[in-house]
Length: 411
Image (cartoon, rainbow, N blue to C red; front, side, top):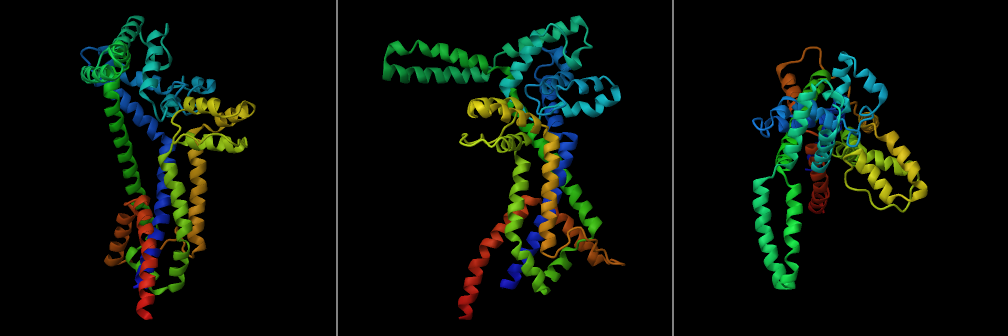
């Protein structure tokens, strides 16, 4: 039984290492074309177009350009393209504008950041960026609609807060007496002012953006898995047979399980966290900062990273960390560099175990059974690295139990 389990462990390690390369490739493609930024622009564009086109016609007509202007704002964009003078000059060239424009976009935005930037645009005396070709009358109408949207109430949130205020007022009156209750209407009014119509739709639209991005990544995974299986001719049926019959290869792959799991943890973590988190970590490491508080879970924007540095890094080291953070904040470049290192590490693990991931295994005359094995490989790789990572952990945890049981039976 242990031979069968080791064969499955070796097979899972091979599938995991190849899946990691596919994951790294999808990360690189996503960074190169800025999938996150373009999906976020689509989400804001859809939000502006459909929040109420009858009431805000200018907003709906200029939804795409307004979304682009919001996401390239230097306070939230994590791209060095966002506020570079040379890039602004290049963007005046129509052909380059189509190519470079998407690299200006932020990969994440919060409701407060969206409302603050919209307020700035509504108060701006001149048309900024991509909105500069609007006529004066259209610009004034758009500003008026943005101001109206930011001040529009959300009836559902208003009802919920009114009910909550009633419950809270009763509780405070019972505990602290009548004198404390006048404070509640002011507090509720302040909260109600921030829970407007825009914020009410923002959350659901961001959920749709996340779903769309996940779908794009799944499509890239399936595409690259199929391309890898066809290019290399890796046959899952033949691979299982080889691992079962070759104890040396099986043992070498099983011995590489811990390294493969470590590489998978790094790659999958990079897939979840934005590049700015790694940029901040690297900046602290380069500046040799010690004794700083624990980093926030995820750094979504450049402004958030700068704010954390100013609040938590000692004054004598702050300038050095800020400088390094700015240098490391080119998100796409950071992802590409990290992806290249992870890819080299992954292929090295497989090579040390005696398995060449990129070897072409097509026979001179493949039969139908061999083609079926290649199609099975493509389907298995399409499951993704997280699936094979969890499968490897489960099989590795089962091995000591099975080994001890087999030893007891032999005794």
